[in-house]
Length: 276
Length: 276
Image (cartoon, rainbow over all chains, first blue to last red; front, top):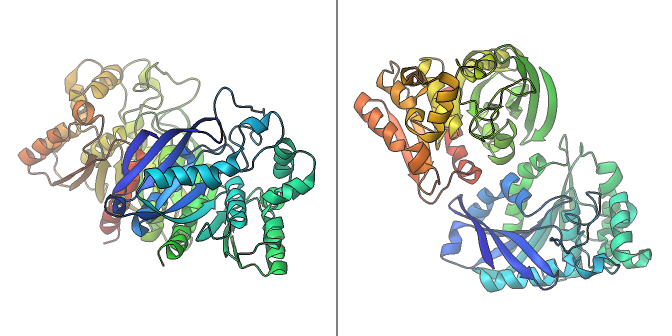
């Protein structure tokens, strides 16, 4: 992994690394925040998955998470949201192709040759992080919007792998909303049965591990009633007996101003699980 | 003033307003953070002046100041860094023209018709803010790089107007460094005597009010030895008996990661002066 950015921040370092991804078949950039405690001890890791149009930069420049990561001694890893590069398929819209990997393994051409963000997040990235940084194998995962979907899906599909999971404004039921229907049709094909493995509302129905879900959602979010629909997850969790804390935050929208306002509480939540 | 952005943030509102500036002869955007206390009482105001290439957006998206403004009950006003619009003169470089107003009143064509950022910051903007928002006349001022220069100059030239002043990585002696020499030659002409009224190192020599200066400067700042040269201000302050706290912060560069790391201390410093 080649370090391409290195900036002092809250006593630690906000770095960005570049590496070749075997899973994705392209070069990827990933942001790593190392809090000051990382100089002396191995620390747990919070993975952050960003939303549509984002790269590894959005979260590290706008969320203000470093302060809380430094306070709690947690490494924060924020990858890009899709494969990148000239040879990688793309589409015209902001909601398909580059910047819109949806954290699935695509099975349909032309996407299937690079769009394997599920495997990248679930396996390749943690292995790279755990081989190259002073971290333990205690992991947490969170994300925003498309990345909130990704965090919920990766955690629900991997019992025991994450100590905690949270999300901001997640797409909880991609199979039932326009963003998800467009992306899943392209990446996974028309068979909706194949979509269920990447749909949090479907996954909680059969989840063996009852990992509590913490979700913050702004009630002034412009996508709340069309793309996000958190009540679908509430109903699924109630039916399955799956623990869910879903907080509707009055006045907040879909932006990083919302994330910045509550990321401190999320990092404290993850720190309690990561460092019991 | 027309509100063009309105986003919940740390219990308050991160807004952006658009208004016609009589001083600048153009339309200007200005960011205003109203902390939750603003719903019930009038609050003091911290003015933030941004650096080269910035608009009103950079500080509000990257510095994470809203958390501290909400904690201390301070309104934060962050204007754009130059006049804007089709009729406003510009230059090719990033360090002259739009995004590079340098907080002076230009006397030279073609700049003199719009580039009057000194008057805008000193008079028009505070008058607008104090007429339109729930604020008191208790004012503080801070800024970064070119904006740190602006904050120091505006405070030093207006005894009694600001309760406190601070800066991150300021251009303390624009008359003696390339950025300042280029801008001042264009905006003010070749007569270096005319430059002294906008040069903090010159202004401390005759400052009647000994308003303490708080400055943070990263020692890994890529512009430290060529454009910023804080030791010139230290020497001037020592010679004039002007109180200065100049902190060299090890490892930090010129970026918003540096500002984010210390803006909390600056806002606490201003809050102590604003709400004694």
